[in-house]
Image (cartoon, rainbow, N blue to C red; front, side, top):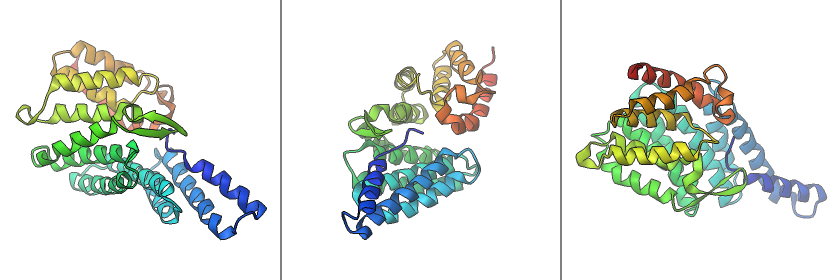
Length: 277
């Protein structure tokens, strides 16, 4: 999975010095312990399609945060904990439960973004958690957060993230996740409060086109909803048909996003049926 990988170097570094006795063992034992705990959490996240794995990831990431020896390790642990908690929330059915869990992931991400303010990941998971929290809480009741959400996602666009050990622009993080979140916000908001379906379509169109090599099911579904609202049903059908064709082989759509695909394929099919031929 394309997650933060900055802990890998710490593991190698720690074990090298522990094995040679070049530096006091106790100092680097904590680094090794953090890396081991982080890896265990990361492994659970990769297996998140299995019930309980995402929560196990969040719990193990929380323990990793306690073992962190520096801000970078703590940041990595908090981001992973927030991400796993967010995924738990996406599988909940009751709004009250969603409000609680997305509130938790938002709080964890806020700690991360305050810790390393030059990194996009904390801002991103804070923003997507805020957006999901607002939907569960009710758009009209959450109108006061719309400016916070917009500012947060616009901040993501100005920062950088670390993916598979490589620096990437914040805009590309999570398959153009900032575009996706802003597009959803403009789509769900009433016009008098800043809602704008045309702007939403532009954001989703860019996200779908530029993340084609790393497709995200939610990009496609939410893009199709906007297209329908904008009177472009034919294009919406094409977008959804492309996603649905992989129903029996989801790994061919995106091997790293099988869990998300499986969770969302029902929504894609339901929307496609609603649109008709």
